[in-house]
Image (cartoon, rainbow, N blue to C red; front, side):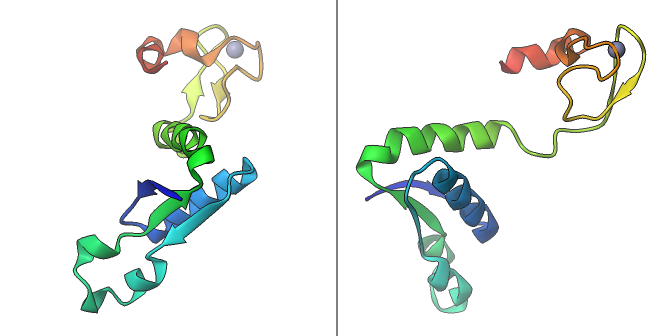
Length: 112
Ligand SMILES: [Zn+2]
């Protein structure tokens, strides 16, 4: 097994394990128990870690980096530049006229 990720937040570790398993990657969380008794152990030594099989390592790393770059809370609603309708932040195209969100958010394109 190889360590692919570590986090200070156990919930993150669980979230990533779930996503990896949805992608048919077997993932193990190490240190989750140590973490719960961290009063006795230096903090840095008990960060929860995600371990995967070497075979899955590259794919797991890729999935995790995509997760890190696309947080679920993507921000406020946006207003369509074409028709002026208000759209939820997780819509990538306008519900009304199907214009793409990106066309009204030039700055976001630099992340692509
Ligand atoms: Zn529109």
